[in-house]
Image (cartoon, rainbow, N blue to C red; front, side, top):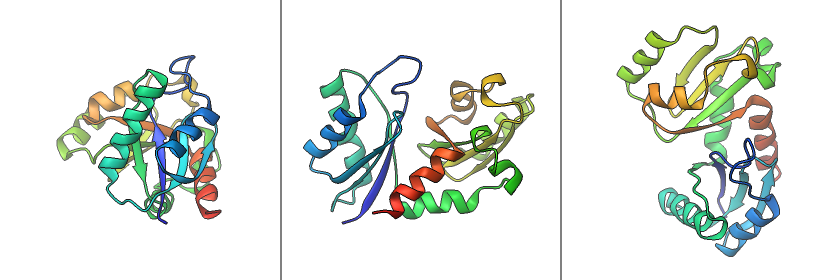
Length: 181
């Protein structure tokens, strides 16, 4: 059965939209997904399903979260091949990759347009280094994410698409989890 990775946006962050991972796993199982595994408490779920309609799967999960937990969360789906491609495409050198908590991958709903990318680069004045490749934005925060004024809301506004971020360490843990499938 094909494996999928779902990344939930905005749950268990800052005390908002609290969803226990064991309950999230149970929801996925109730939706008919198999071999469900969660990673960390930020809404990373690896699961299997014979279905291949990503939009329908995403919608079903979002509706299940709303009905079960009473909150909204946008779901971003990737396949194992797509996740491996994210790692392979990382434009940063090993020195930056080794600082995994300072390197963020923002998974986007769709690829931003050239004009929104230009708008982002024209408006950005911080020392963060931003590369957008397809449906992912790679951001290196030299001073750490906690010191930056660049956050998801600012990136989403400039890029014109929704996204959810995972630091490099989490991305690599997801790759390892998928390889155990």
